[in-house]
Amino acid sequence: MSETARDLDIDRLTGHVYLPEADGYDGERLGFQRLNPHRPTVIVGAAGPEDVRAAVEFAAARGVRVAAQASGHGLGRTLEDGVLINTRRMSGVRVDPEARTAWVEAGATWRQVVEAAAPYGLAPLSGSFPGVGAISYTLGGGVGLMARRHGFAADHVRRFEVVTADARLREVTAESEPDLFWALRGGGGGFGVVTGMEVDLLPVATIFGGGLYFDVAEVPDVLEAWRRWTETAPEELTSGVTVLSYPDLPMLPEALRGRHVAHVQVAYLGSEEEGRELAAPLRALGPHLKDTLRVLPYTESGTVFDEPDRPHAYRSQNRLLRALDPAALATLPQTAGPAAPVMCVVGLRHLGGALARLPRVPNAVGHREAAYLLNILSPVEPGEEDKVRALHDDILAPFAAEALGRSLNFSYGPLDEDEVRAGFAPDTYRRLTELKAAYDPDGVIQANHAVGRR
Image (cartoon, rainbow, N blue to C red):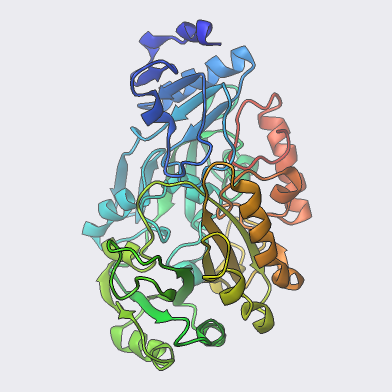
């Protein structure tokens, strides 16, 4: 196909085209997740919707696939050959403070949306890591820092602008194209290349949040205590806990270095006094290594989970759970702790609340009844994937009795069809496959986790 790449109408594009031998090709294809990156024959560095249309039209005419990448945070399925659309240049955000909405272009991150909304005392339903692409996050549902009070990010989309496999630029709303609108809100990125979306903003300028860090050796019951604490948490409180073994390296914070740490995360939509009262049982668990709980501007909301911002290679598996079985929970410090053959980052998130309720306009988000999400992530070197996957399977096995399925947004790695199906109720998955066949009968659009035609 490289010989025909010159057939892409360069004069029609306002962005850039990269072939494998060109300077800048690697910079365009690499995202945040560096394991097994895309290897396209052509990359279009899109500057606007017309560039996206041209790229899709070019791919469809030649019978090859096209994929889109913004931040590349959740890369799972690699594009071999075909056309990659890099949307990072399409990063504009327009805020309407009267309507409390934002128009978000394809390549914008949540950090850019948060910063654009903040001067008006508004905030989006952004995720725990501000560097994630806002649109890709939302297409998969989106569980953020205000999720238990306000639901999934996908619940708060008003309209999309999307290029479908026929290279048509469509405006998609609940009125104009209800089926496609339903599918795009939680069904993933396989129904077209979204070039923009309009989302609700919330009147939130600050939250009470941060983290409490415990040494698991000193406070061995921290996970079970957190589980019990969540049972009475109000919907205004969204929380999680991350457990990992920090290596003993000089560049790491001295308080955490060489320790097996449980980092309990808190995001509360209420007063500081109420937040401190809610957090008091956690503080009483025992000595903590760090305490970062405070009133913070929403522009600093990324400090709550304090996730690494350096691109690297990793894989993960997860389960959405009806409940957290205390006996299963007690296995995690051993199976995923310092004795594990590969470093594991265990992430637990409390769900429920508004996440469990259908939005005013229903969408494709799966397994709303889940009460918790358990995610296991490991850094991976080439050749270690099978070893890491087997370890993750072993760690997750004790939780099987309470498992409802999986979250596709937290699945960092390729999934087979049965694994993708596990992200949805059977009727939802069936409807998604029918819509995929209707809007993309030739399988032009390659999604990160594909429903229907692969």
